[in-house]
Amino acid sequence: MKPLRSLAAAGAAVVFAGLLLAFPAQSATAAPLQSTEAASKAKRPSFDVTEATIDSIHKALSSRKLTCVELVQAYIDRINAYDKPAEGKLATNAIQTVNSAALTRAAELDAAYAKSNDRFTGPLHCIPVLVKDQVETADMPTTYGSAIFKGFQSGRDATIVTKLRAAGAVILAKTNMGEYASGYSGSAFGVCRNPYDLTRSPSSSSCGTGAGIAANYGAVGIAEDTGGSVRGPAGANNLVGLRPTTPLISRYGMMPATPTRDTLGPLTRTVTDAAILTSVIAGYDPNDPLTAYSVGRMPADGKYEEGLNKKALQGKRIGIIRETMASDTNPASPDYARVKAVVDKAYADLSALGAKVIDPIEVPNLKTLMSSASDYRGETEEAINGYLAQLPNAPVSTFKQIANSPLVTPTRRAGLRNALGKTTNDLAYLKELQAREKLRQTMLKVMADNHLDAVAYPVADHESPIIPDDILTNPDATSGILTGANRYLAPAIGFPALAVPAGFTSTKLPVGIDLLGRPFSEEMLFQIGYAYEQGTKHRKAPSTTPPLPTP
Image (cartoon, rainbow, N blue to C red; front, side, top):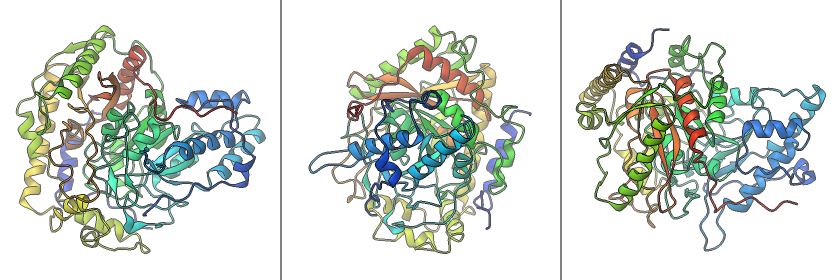
C-alpha cells in the first residue's frame, strides 16, 4: 500500500521549509442504528454518560458500576433518541453511521478487562470515539459528506484510527461533515445543526463531531482542521478543540483538502480529555513523511496530560489581538457586541488567574497578510487526485468528476469548481506561499518582542449564524451571513491553537477563544487552557439533548 503523499507537489515544500525555521530547537441517508445480541442484553446503567470524561468512565468501570457494553449502549441510546429529526422537527443530525461492531468490540474489552485482573487495555480503554467521516475506517463506510461515496468502504484504517484502536478505544460512529471538508451541509446527510440552537450553524466541516460531542453522543471526538474546522465547532458548541502544529498528527487515510494546511485534532468537552487524546494520536508516521518534523518535539514521556495544574497561568504572558481578522466582521452588529462582552470577560479572567495580559498587541499588516495568505485552491486538485489513486474501488477517480457531479450540493459544487485547473505551479500559489511565510515571521517577531507565551483572540466575532432555508439548493446560500471567523491564522502559519469555551452570550449562544502558540507548544497550551477552564467552568451541556431517564 503506497503512503499518502503529504505535500501537494512543487512549491508546497517551501511552506514547510519556512515552518521548520520557526520550530523550537529541540447517502444519502445515515445507516440504520443497528443492535447486536450484546446490545439486546445491555441495560441502561445508572452511570449518566452526559458530560462523562475519560477519567469518570474509567473510575466507573474500575468500581464495577459500569460495563463497556452498557456504556456503548448508553451512547447509542442517546443517538437514537436525539440525533435524527422527527416529522416536522429539527435535530442535530450529527451522526452519519453508527458502527455495527461497536457493541461486539465493547464486549471484547469487558472480557479482556476481567481476564487481565482489572487492567485496562490502554489509555482509551472502552472510550467511545466519534470520528469525522473524512477519515477512513475499515469497518464502516467513509463518505466525505457526499452522496457520491454512499456506502463506500476503502478497506483500511487511517493511522489515527489504528492508534485509537490500539489504545483501547471503541470507534463508535462516523460523524457528518461539510461536503468535501467545507461548510456544515452535504449531499450525504443534509444539514448539521447546533445543539444549543437547532436553527443555527454548528460551524464548518467538522460539524458532526462538534455537535455530537456537545450533545454527548460520544466521549471524545476526532475532527479535521484546514481552515478552522476543529476550532470553529469548538467555539460554536462550547467545546475544547486543538489544531496541532501541522506536522504533529498523521493525515494518512484522510481525504486531503489543502495538504500544507490539513491536520487532524481532538474535539472534546474538557482540556484533559483533549490532552489525553492528543497523546494517543500524535507522533511520527512513515506513511505521512511530514510527521518526521515532530520527532524530538513532543513531551519526553509522550503524555500531554501530565503537568496540568490550576496555577499554570501564573506568570504566563498572553498577548491579545484586538484587530478583527475576518473580512465579514461587522462591529456595528448587535451580536458583535454580545460576543465582545464575553471575550472581554475572558481576557479579564486570564489576568485574574495570574497571567500577564498584554492588551492589545499590534500585528503589522495583519489583515493584508491574512488576505494574501487565504487562497486554498492551488493544492486541492492534485492532492485529491493522488488520494483517489490509492482507492481502486472508489466510485470516481478524479477531482474533476467530483467537482462536476450533480450529486454534490450546488453550494459546495461552486466552491470545488473554483479549484479546477489550479496548480502549485501557478504564480498566485507562489504569492500565497510568500504571504504565509511573511505572516509566520511577523507573528514570531511580535511574540518575541513582547515576550509572549501565547496569543489570544475570539474564534469568531459573531454568534453562530442562522442556517439558510435553501442551504442545500442555492449556490449562494451562505453569502452575506456574518460569521466573523478569526480561525484562519493558525492554518496559514502552521502553528498550534487551542480553542476553549469562554462562556455564553446574553442570547445563550457559546463563545470560544483561541490560544495560539509557537510550533510544538501544545503541552504549554494545554496547561494554559486547563488553568483557564478550571478557573471559569464555562462548559455546560445543551438543553436540547438532556440526560435520558434512568431505568
